[in-house]
Image (cartoon, rainbow, N blue to C red; front, side, top):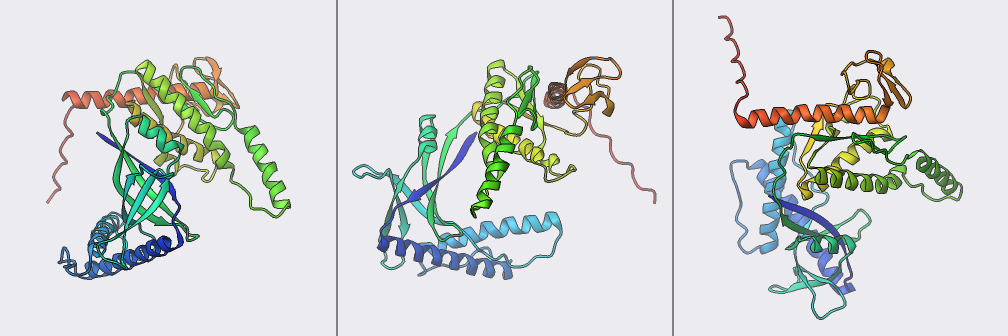
Length: 362
């Protein structure tokens, strides 16, 4: 299985090169919009001839084909009315190569629309994260893209790839529950540091920034570092113990009430971050059904909302007393083990076939 990571790099062009790259990016955007309209209204035609228009027009047509393919699939899924997609932002194709006799790390080559058979070479600098990926065995893909943000600043998008083995499910699971009182609670008894002080400090800083007339910073910005550290720890522990990593499904969390709470965002962010790290380290990920995990006893599986009082969980059936977040993580681990058992049973071929639907009466 091939893993792909994306890195955003800063470019340092001179004025003349920047003007050429800007014009090429604009022409590629216009070509993409043109071919999107042509292919949308002529659905029986797979492609149009780009003879004499240059390589940029050909690349834009391939981009438009991909955009329309995704557009029609989404329309088929949602059953909404369709119209011609308006292309606001699109990456201009480019090539990247390592620099040898320069103070810059890489050179980005873009099509030159002013002079044929020539390229615009823009200097690019790498960063720490890209260097770490290359040290881990990732290889830099020569294909890159030139993008422009909402402020009109250009940057490069590069891709690094690595071949890894696909993760296989194990018998046991390491359950992880994410919250605010404790950033992470694991089924092995680990409790992460809390985020309440961090949120309070962020609120005070934002109040001071507003008083001085500056823009405020989101509280999520400061929580990402803590969640990244905890996600890395959880994946490392699961890899060392030979366990699966189980947590609540982020797609289902988005539909639960109340929406908009920072705790829900933290659960989804941790799940997405842990999935990326687990894929790289070969740890199998299990996503469980989130409702009532904090109200269920991990020992007798009795569900009662009265069992949990703040951070203490005391089961009303078996009267076991434990930390509420640890109990929730153990329930997640049990649900994850059940899901893995279904997967292993299905792969072994011993699962029963689904009964056929009864025929409708005439």
